[in-house]
Length: 388
Image 1 (spheres, rainbow, N blue to C red):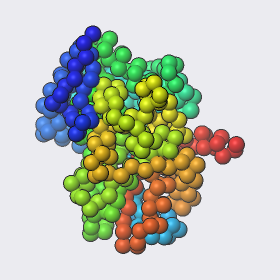
Image 2: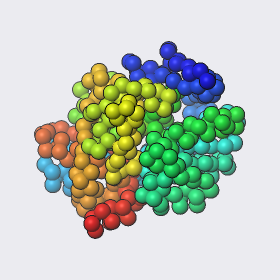
Image 3: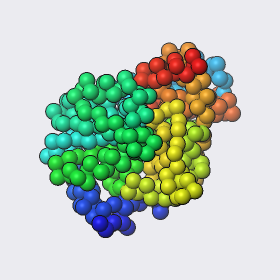
Image 4: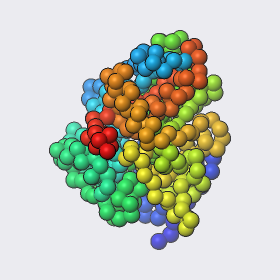
């Protein structure tokens, strides 16, 4: 089976592209053609915005974390409230956009991968809404860590397939979903949840998640009369972060900061390599294979990252830092106690770094933290960790 490298499409510097079998490239070409056809189509846009408002519950607030700001000192901290979306995370934005595209392409069967389960829940939700068959691939370890989300997906009518090979984590779920797509591409739409994979997925996911920064930019100008000093978001595959950064990329005075788990420091320690059909900065072992990773936040447990993040790391437009699991766990509790907001463990990494950063800045500075999801899914896991 030959592999196609689409040299001219979907590149961010040296990163991105499409390194996939020819039959799968044919599927990607059709997907790109339909995405380009519909993304700016007024009827498609109207329907997308309708569901974002009436079903997802957008626009969501940009909340000033006044108590946390007072406790920490320094910069003002604002929270972009993706946790208030229907299904409890940013993932639903992209799920609605892609399923509207799948509907126009005549797909009847939707497949997806999930780590923490939030993308799986969002996909299952969208499939229930639009009456489509839904299969979700999830690493076996993640099905155990996020058993409540597995039940949610099944309750919504999805079939959840535990993936036992490899580490039984997010990377392995993506492998299984891509294998399914190769076998069933004639009737199946792969609703990929992060800003990764072969072109056009990273561009497509960014397009649907850019609503986050479109709103936050308008909201912060209304509240503060100026752009933020920094936008902070957790970074696994990179979907919430690229959405949070998108409308600020051209504003060079706004710092864009992606926060990784110290236990999966892709952008901090990785090297350029091809993973899941695209080139990105990747953690590799001594044999040149994707390195096993482990984070307390299942959604950040990935050895690669989106190609645009890789590019922004190399060209210096964005900064990428690490936070220990213990620091995220502390931030999980601090935000809960100061603001009455229980964040996802993924988002807690961003909160933990924002607290550090705020102390280094002045009261005139403003930080926006993208609160990518709520922590209901993590409460039992945190309870067990704190008991130990």
